[in-house]
Length: 311
Image 1 (cartoon, rainbow, N blue to C red):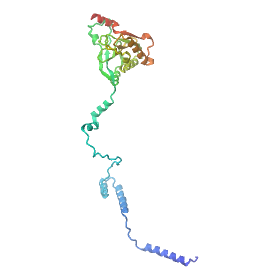
Image 2 (image 1 turned 60 degrees about the horizontal axis):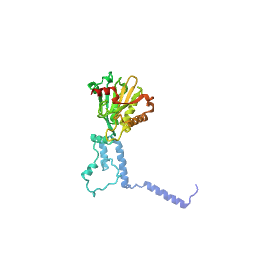
Image 3 (image 1 turned 60 degrees about the vertical axis):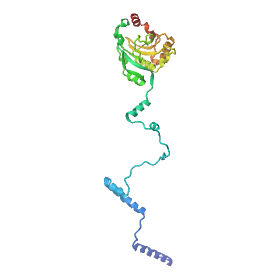
């Protein structure tokens, strides 16, 4: 081998002796920092946790060794604390006004009241009338059967909710010959001689049986929605015209649907009423011929005249 320079051999010798002496010499114990000790404890406790996952007592022991209680979830303090120490106390009325809403039934009643369906301008009532085979000439003031024939159905109707609760349970398509269903203002009976009907009349529509239920449905909505009332309404000092009610009566080959008003002499109102019906009713329900609708005062009926004469 090539000879090494003396200086180089000396340096290498020093390095060899230093390494050998360092390896051979006993090591002094290392002094661990506090963080190292904590890390070691954390590793040891982590191992114990994995080894005792099903043992609650060991978990509490480990937690005690950490010198803390088992963690409990807390909400981060995201909201500033509002200081109220300098504010005056609220009065009794202020406290009641800002109190939380009642629970249970009281809360439900409060909700229902706040979202209550708007009420109709007038209150209505359905009536059922079983047909008779005798003609109007057999009607007399002494005929108790005639006077008591219309029977009220259900309770008064004050909103669209009650309307459909009744309407959906009255299948007019199932009525028998000469049976009738009426929808009238509360307090008015569906007979010509009722005090609010005796000076009035009605528009009569002869409607095919296949479309009569839909015609009746739409006409009822026009009535309770005040569309028909707006047509006949007058601004007189007394005896204002009104829509009294509607009738659905089954006949041999068709259904007769009537719109009753209080004042048969209100010709302008009668014309406006017919116009409102023809404009608002669906196109497929429009009467095909003018002969299929007409107006008639109640006192023009033979039955009404016979009753008036007998009185």
